[in-house]
Length: 197
Image 1 (tube, rainbow, N blue to C red):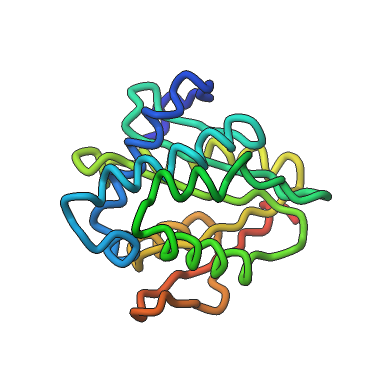
Image 2 (cartoon, one colour):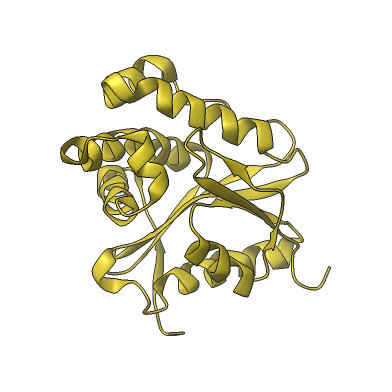
């Protein structure tokens, strides 16, 4: 699907992007651990993701397909670390309520396994359920990878499913050591060297 148009989103679409990610991530085992109560899951996820997507609007890049069915959120990790979102603890508690400690635990897991070398971090790649398998996620990856390759910059991500891991492997990512949530749910950290390096 090489004719997919990719656009960079502005801050006015922060909530829309967060809702798209939440909708796509509802089926993931990790989100079931984060928010065990199904009736609350999508709203809590969207509120949490809104903090991170908004942060990426200021410190990274948020891309979407023209129809907004797929979203990618990237953070550059070059030189100095990206600062945390403003008032993060307060906002996280407001977003996640009684599940806040689970989100904090996940943040700590990600931080403990995050590489220090310069790279761009793919925090989220999400496609609405009714459009999955149509090449939209791959189009978003190709779009940003072209820039990474031209500038000699690696990519990093934490795949949250075997399906995601396999997709990223097809785009040049190589697996690192798996880490797990307390219930055993795995994350697959993956690294991609820029093409031509």
